[in-house]
Amino acid sequence: MRSLWPRFLRKKRRRSRKAARSSQNALSVALFTGLCLLATVGWLAAQVHTLRRELGALHHTEGPAGSAQDRGTIVAEMVHKAAMTQESVARHASAIDALRAAIQNDPTVLVDRMILPTVRLDLAESSGSGTVIHVRPFRPAPEAPGPSETLARVEWEVFALTAYHVIQEALEAEGGAMTVSVEFFDRTGEVCQKAQAEIYRHDEARDLALLRMVLADEPPACAVLASRPALGRIRTFNPVYTVGCPLGLAPLPSKGEITNTNRKIDGQIFWMTDAQMIFGNSGGGIYDARNQEMIGVSSRVCAYGRVLPAAVPHLGVMVSMGTVLDWFEEKNLAFLAGAAEVDPAVLPAGAKERTK
Image (tube, rainbow, N blue to C red; front, side):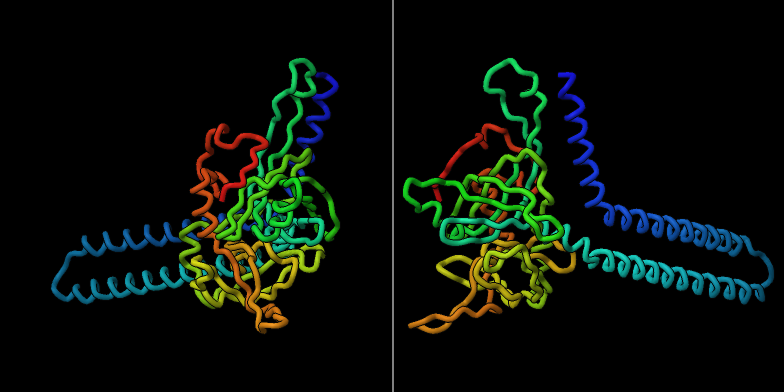
């Protein structure tokens, strides 16, 4: 155990440094925003104190009827100061919003929140995309009591979301391998990790699939899923990014807008976007450009022509995150979206479900 403990500490320090680097911009914004709010609150408190003192002086003013003019002057000054206070608060709020928007649009933040969670899926005759949506420490049960090394080993349980039709080839392969090859990328676009993922859940009608894998090292990043209230505010013309591995390349972003939130296909409701998609994008994440929260999964593109259909890259069809959250709830997987953790018995290791 003595020889294993330093190695465990080194791994822990490496994970801490990685987390510190990836959250540096977010911490800077939080610190600066907090200081701005603190200064604003202090200034407002001083103004309120002054107004209360002057109001008290007004109530205690005594004298002939002519002093009513003095009272009117004081009231007018107080109203003016109140208006100036409101205007100052509005200016501070606008400045903070502008700063937050500038940080959120910083290229480093965009890469951390949208590119790094994207993975490439390699199958025998095709490739697709996926997105890491949940990561948690995982301590495998020892095969047999004895070596202390087994007790010290901590791995990472990783869940990635993709489209059903991307992994359909693996499901229909002879023998039903039920696994796919997954590749992770660093900030330079180079492969930094590889893993075999099991097809943990899938739904053909919704065109969704969930992959599960256990890694020795923590993955580069994890996407932030939009909440239901945030999804309810999405409208046509909402700016979005779609991120995937087109033509088997490293993850690439494409910017566009939401064009439809009520497209019916085979009885299911899908959204549409004009962000460019092409073969290989399927299964990748689609994000709200304003906050980089994941709002959907790339499903397909529209096509025209009967004999030789031609794809229309700017008519993309996506599975909304609302549909994904419904699916999670049906499958007792709500913890993937940040809900309370379920009993581990609900998620047996190695489970392979083919039920739709």
